[in-house]
Image 1 (spheres, rainbow, N blue to C red):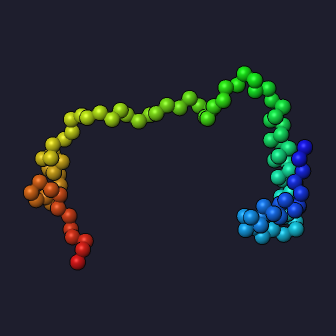
Image 2 (cartoon, rainbow, N blue to C red):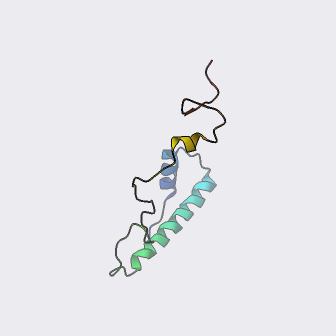
Image 3 (cartoon, rainbow, N blue to C red):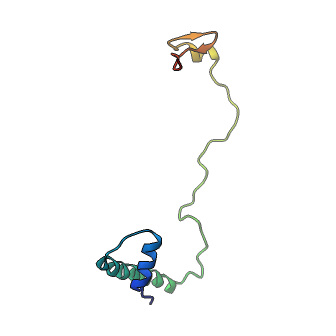
Length: 96
């Protein structure tokens, strides 16, 4: 099993621009070592008949097909507009 040295933790902390105390370095070395040891346990699993996958769920595109369809008319769109002119919505000016 792989052990993480304090020097390795300090090097990675330096790359990440993290300031760690000696106690934090020691704690991180143990925690990272535990993580790597657990990950190495996965190498013992028999994955001979397991297909490679990018996702555990069978996902499909859930978007609708992009097909033309009937839509409302310009008059229907403007019928509830608070202010309109020449077939367009009128809004207050925001530029001075």
